[in-house]
Image: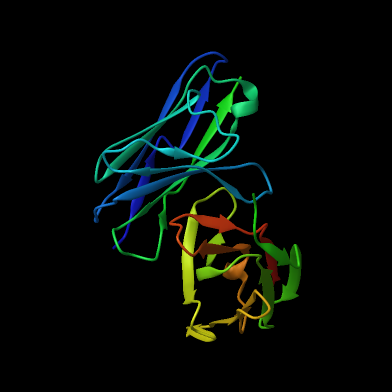
Length: 115
Length: 111
């Protein structure tokens, strides 16, 4: 149980375009989802926390107009990187958590490359 | 900001040996969790230890927590080549849902 999927697993796009990444909890209801980014050989940095049906809470330094997060249902959250630039190239990972649970379950990640 | 500091940053041992990784943190926590990440992949949850617990076991894993020193250790016994990965500790602070990750330890098990 507790499987989280992400789509796509890899995406290459041109500078200036927007990219949407989906995160789904497959066998549980995720009241809270989290989005992280990870640069090569570094740790995960939390970008934002989203609760179903409400606006995401962004971490300091993360531009909410650039990284649009939608958590419209208990099984789906999306991250849209708007007007992507090469410096946005990174590994984006989501995680999901059930109400009242301690553990977050992580998706397999999405590797974004912006040319 | 990153709360956790992990050491060593990299560890290379022979198969069959034990591997110990340490994690320190700064604030009061609800729990501390350990995750494994294979190169270019997502994270796998290994074990969670709550602030009122001192030690926990799961298979070949043993985790300790010392809240007075704000530190934790992860011991992997009888290591295998398949244990090669990066290991991260993550803390959940009191009153917060989010996890703050340490810098990670890159573990290499040599056959």
